[in-house]
Length: 484
Image (cartoon, rainbow, N blue to C red; front, side, top):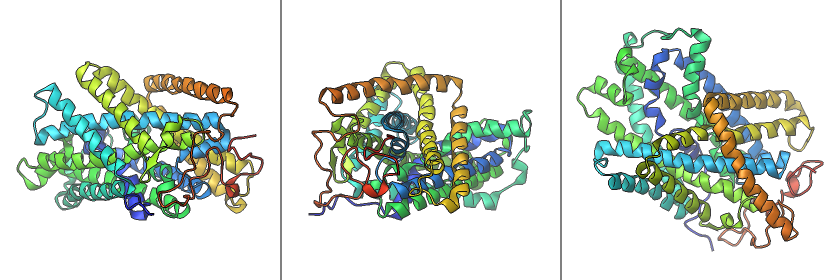
């Protein structure tokens, strides 16, 4: 019998998932962060959007060839074997729950504008935990509710942003723009400096691919949702930043801690802009948490399906991997409590910075997988007539991913590599455990039951663990999905 709580995402919901995960709370600070570089930062936005679109198109093409839940993990494992797949899943999983803790902490700051909670540590911690667990409960209720929350939060978050963007056209004053280049780094240096701040505004472009198994007609809709979601996010970023630049004097914007609030106050007068933007930021972050909570469950689920994560992560209910949701939310909760109660603010900020590196590892592996499929002549995965176009697109996306890594900074890359390879111990444990029972890593776990939807019919992406659908196995590869 069909579970009414489980429902596959259509194109609008999948697009909202991408947009909601890309646009969190950072947009409400971006104009002030890039203002010191002048309006040249708008050029950086255009360059970054081109790179993000290239990455979005690559994910769409990869999803056409392998439309299973797991996105970058699935592609990396198919091209390079179990270890590369594990690194993609591990790094992405770490990114999701640490980022969720950061979003909860940031959301409490906006909540304090509406309801004072910072007077006592216990109130602050309680507020952060409530913000974390409400989206988790929506996920546990089933994909039907995940999609509903995502659509509603996306609409609600865009309402005030569009108000600023449209109002900015009416109240736009070129005198407020300030210089084209406010620094002395030169054109290239200014674009690169602004881009380093803006680079991570596009993290989340992979969201539809990560949940491909929950999307209706994934071969068609994942790519469309990824591109539409990325374009929508880019349009909001660009119009919102331009509107703030044109309504708030440059000298004031550089020192602003609430640029959108200042813009609303400048356009309409009064001090109510702060309340409006605080509400919008809370809705935006709640929507982002809703989507990222699902992502924190999908990565380990996909890896567990192939024996590369503990089998407990295979448990699903109402279309959602429940163990992944619970474990990810518990870890995010513990990190949030530690940040508030143990005085580990510096360590917390370091971990958040590290996630800006770990988030790009799956991007690099996925785009490298696309290049591998193209250059190895696997005709079932690429049309020869489109080889040059697709290879150029994949190289652009790979370069964009490398730029993301560079933008994280030396310290984050150094610490991120250590954090990433700490996962090798987990891989060693799983490999040794499976060797003891006489089953190679990547084979179907003995305790794993067939993955069947509540209706009793197997879903197209729910292939047996460790196997790739017969019509998707590249020439020269075994059914285990790795290289021979």
